[in-house]
View 1 (cartoon, rainbow, N blue to C red):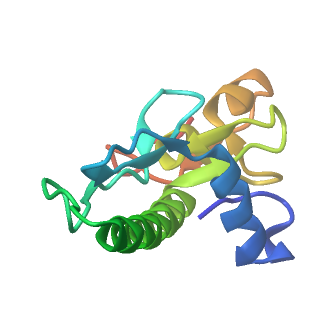
View 2 (view 1 turned 180 degrees about the horizontal axis):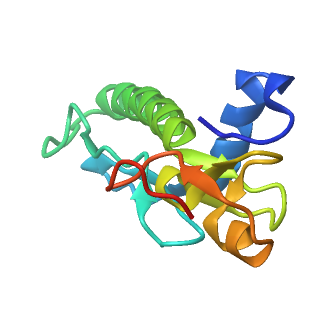
Length: 137
């Protein structure tokens, strides 16, 4: 979702931006990538995906080569999925330059920004996502 003043730059730029922020805590058993909201600390994009060969052990050199290639392929797909998920749930604040979640980002009249900056600049706005419908900052 990444909202900012230059929305027309394209999805590729947003995904590349999220790719750079993605943290990895994958193991040999499962893939786990996430982005942390720099305001509230919540994690987004992290759907843990189990490696298809988890718990199995290759015996021959040929199996090891195949399993390594399969692991890399599945990891790449899990990473791309996490990037897409995070991009739908995160926003870039043009004021403080932080990446924040939809709950910490508000739509204002002049410029969309994080709740912290909106409060500091005395700007009213509606959160992109709110627990309570109709809440303003």
